Length: 322
Image (cartoon, rainbow, N blue to C red):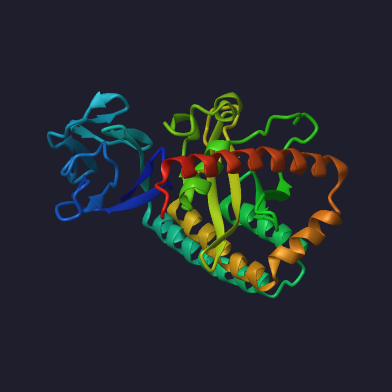
């Protein structure tokens, strides 16, 4: 018998930990005293212990500040059963019983996906048509991460972000409202760092966005494109919550690793292709269908507004140099 404990942080990629027969493991925020380290401010230094009983595992809270719960009840040496939901001070996790064969399959799948990512990077590095490169990038990202929708934004000669390729969006009913989270884009523009939300509707930073609340976006990732210290664009992908309320396409730490590797690879290729010149040619002679072009134009205008407000906010908050 074995078990898998999968964490679903609101901000960050999901990841899993494996328990084998006979193993007792302690979980908490302190790397020095825990087998499973949870980097979340709600989790205590030494938070809980998963104890092997000879027939399975129990979960015991170790006097943590925010408590440990199994399906809403305090964990006080409580037996864990298959598919239990656990809360470590508010950090959600799913406990599942798995076989050794399933663990081997997980490891094999991870190796396969990493190899696929390397092969995709090699293929993208050989592409010399900027439009085809971006289209292939987006298809690859959606394929390897399991995301439902996505788009790529690029920086033009005038410094404005332009929407160039998109997939999976409802352009017919778009109007002036983008069906996604501008909060993630804004955060990437402000920090230059990737944003991953396993459950965007419960994320304090993103949930206030009408797009997240109205459309029930469950998972999203936004990764910057940069080369030689210069911002050249970003990739956005998201998954949707199904009618049954289940999360589809939750992004894992492996998804983020692959996504950032593809972004870094394509950034170098785009920089080599002298993007500042090529992007004007792409935008001037777009081969996109009229409805898709409409979506990209509206998205481009909205993102430009965000970029300008972000720049203005940073300027007001930064000291001027003499």
